Length: 103
Image (cartoon, rainbow, N blue to C red; front, side):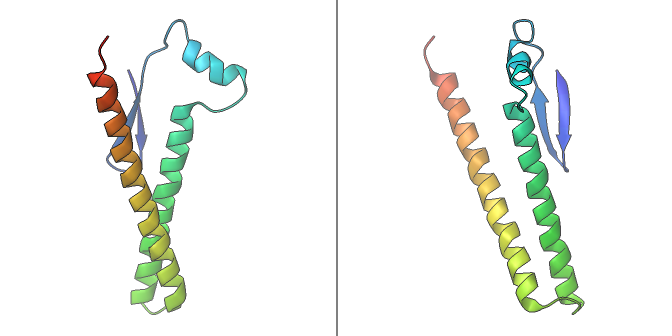
C-alpha cells in the first residue's frame, strides 16, 4: 500500500489499484480529482489555516498585529479544527457501520 503523509501525524493510505485501476481510472478519465486527492487537499488547507491562526496569535502576543485580525484568524482555525474532528468522527462511524453489515 502506498502511504501519503499530510501535515504532521496524519497519514492516509491509498489502496493498491483495484480491478486493474478502475477506481483511479474513473477519476483520471473524467479529468477530475479522486476522493483521496480532494481529502488530501482539504487537509492541507486545514493545516494552513491552523498555522495562520498560530502565526496571528504569536503576532498578537508580540503586539505586531491588530486584535481583530488575531481573533478572526484564531476563530477560523478553531472552526476548521472542529470541522475536521466532526468529519473524522463521521468517517469512523461510517466505517464501523460498514464493518457491521452482514455479507
